Length: 131
Image (tube, rainbow, N blue to C red):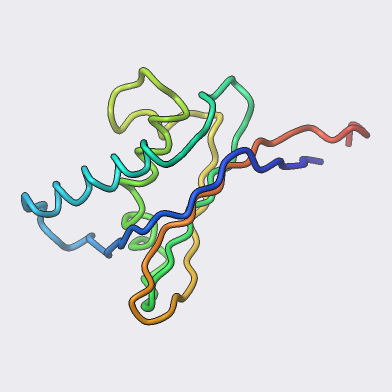
């Protein structure tokens, strides 16, 4: 049985979009750069030390996205930034493929004009009873 301990939490004022059908314009790339910079500045987390982690990214917005593909893609830039903090030294966009990190994507409906991303990082620990 696994127990999980919360090791980092941040709620950032980031508005995410369903971008699966959009082209990458300069404005979109600049927005992604600013989102990643905000995550790097705000999230306090120790580098991954081979313990398995669960990262839960929750999109908060008045409108929901399709949960099958659009939701995860809308949080891709945030996931990349979190992974870069957890696994320093890997190439940009490669750190999120670490076998020690599991990802969950969720969304909750926010109030009118309420946009945010909630980041929670849990350390998975073996329970004491050995089950």
